[in-house]
Length: 317
Image (cartoon, rainbow, N blue to C red; front, top):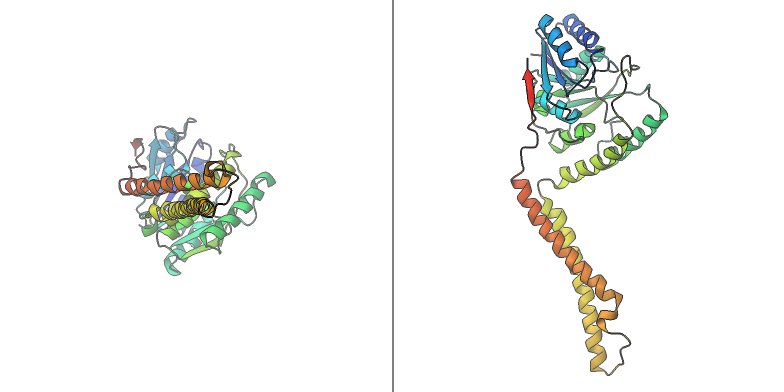
């Protein structure tokens, strides 16, 4: 199979007929073998009934329905597990991504041997309250991840080699940083393609202002997990040793200063416990010990992680 198109959706019943028809037309015109994997993330507007009607008329459509809303990352991860195509295309269900971009994305993956191609909506139809924070996060992500050639990490329109989606795990709200996850997994041939950003035709956006706060937290999480996820002791242990060492040095200095004063008959103005440095040293030693123990616990957790990507799938067609 040439292409799997994975579409996560939540309350997009109005756009589904037009979207699937458009994708099928593009595939037929280019003689691709394909499948459309629609992942219903707990919709309540009749999207699943629409998917069943569409699938009855188009055998290339597959549907997966969650019992409740888990989020876009969960939908993408489940869609990746189901995808069978040599190239996997992801796009949003709101018709703001154009299926006409698929042939060029497929060509670049297969002929130019990219692992991942991320869309760049250079001209956006979004308000400034959305575009300005997005530019800030993209700049921060480029700097922290080292992927300097991407302008839009969160674009829903992306293309992947099959090996990429079968070897990465997307959870929480990490869908914003899939290129970073792919890079940490060893897929470093990452490119970009300018794509059309269409105005929303039906419904309304599902993302509020909280996405920007979550985006910053997710960026910090993905950076930490990517760098220290397999060796948390290297982070916590290093910080713990440094803190413990600094506290020990301060404690030794305070004790030596007290003994020196006693040995030379120097009148000491304050007791050891009356000095602020004593409490700073005490806190540093305790904090260092806790960080070191945290490293041990994190190592144990990383070796026996729970199955965090098991979701309650209600029905598969």
